[in-house]
Image (cartoon, rainbow, N blue to C red; front, side):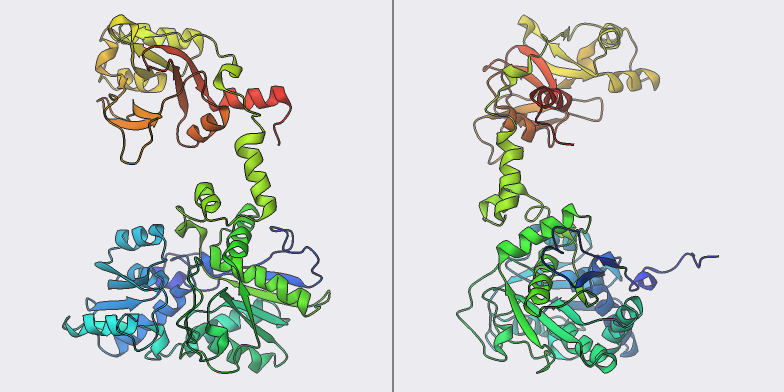
Length: 499
């Protein structure tokens, strides 16, 4: 029988899977060696820092630090997330480039305060996280400053466990380890542990372009910013032992983010730092002329789910020029070329069938059932479009006794908002619409959709909406109803739909 049982969250840290990457995002193109990924993002806190947090918590307990002591944690945010997961009080210092998604996760996890620090602050400067953290700790009785880089924590056993897992999973057949470098702890301890068992193994350190870690203890105050989180420094961190890394590879943001998107398409939901590491593994395998039978292991240490506003956003990727040429072509085709300047008028939608707000719920339900509609537009005085009613909501309201078939639609319809309710930052094409899960007229925003609206814009609308009510430019009359199925049918007619 398998050893499946209820455990504490800390007991689920470690023993992450190792998977083959060839075939994922073109990783194996022109590469003879096998490239495999150690999926550290599959730890419960979704990063390799869960391992570090578990050992730090154990050392805090052995030092007699109270469980409710405030921990002031410096870093990109993953360590703070992991410590918060283990139920510790956290104040977090994160670089300016830390994604908004990660900051939101930190807040949701109960982190008391989040302090942004300069991306390129050098050691000893007042703006460096160490100096800021220590100043804050000095004014917080009982607070403990936590920074992996300072050597205050014994992390040897932490990384020895990770090294043992990798050796077991590869049957000790490892020719190279590729990993992103930030604090230097992982590179130092893994290099030591793995080379003790595999002296010929090469350790490849990965950092963003413009980072200065590989310059070996030469601080570079002119290091420019980069977008890739979790790796890179404007100086070589003190926790990085000389000689622990055999080769350094710098990876541009464009390559890192594009590879991360390719990994996601291949089923590996990894963040940009993992994209950089996998790209670097390819570069190393080709430059070192590794052959069939040799194996490169890549640490995939962070999850794509921390980057909803950045890595996972097509608009953001386009705005920051982070898509490689092939992905850019694919996206442009998806957004524009497949519709070939067509508009909603080309969908040839049937004329809209509506009900009045004075009509009964029974009339509306019968109309939708007879016409196989899932929703019906609702009109007010002068047949002006004022909202809509869904079949599922109407039936539920009657089934649970909230409504009766004789009651008027206006009491339960989903009501459109007025023109003056534009959301902050919305452009002039947007106007209010109703969409609620309850029986009252709560409201949210949507685009004005007319027969002239391009289908490329309608496709973007359907990324967050299920149905579009097509109106005249004044948004007075409902002319038709469009769904994503109408787009799919249109593309099928044009023979451009790809399966």
